[in-house]
Image 1: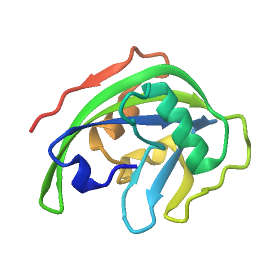
Image 2: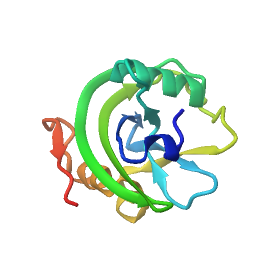
Image 3: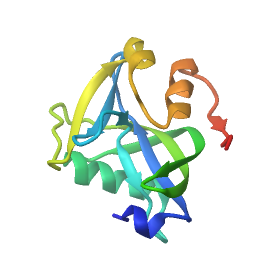
Length: 148
């Protein structure tokens, strides 16, 4: 996985998963941070986005995953530790048949969040959160451009 100093100034490609159970979504939080994000992670050079997502789910949860359709794409920029970051978040519906999901990485905590609780959750990037709140279940994929 890349460190911020390796990726600062470059466009990062992030694969994110919408994993649903009933009316809840699986979200993850780095234990040292107060905010949450969707499961997934960085796409390595030369790696297909869908393959990266399956790899990340396997590494983080130890569960096999099947990537479904594209939910949407969000372009996002932010500053962290004085470095500018620019990323493209590819968000896919992902199916995980394993019932008991637990983090395999000590620095990550996973939890199920009811969709009704999304407005009060600090889920980042905020454009992903907004799109998930607004999207109808059968909606066309969304595109949210970056507004620096």
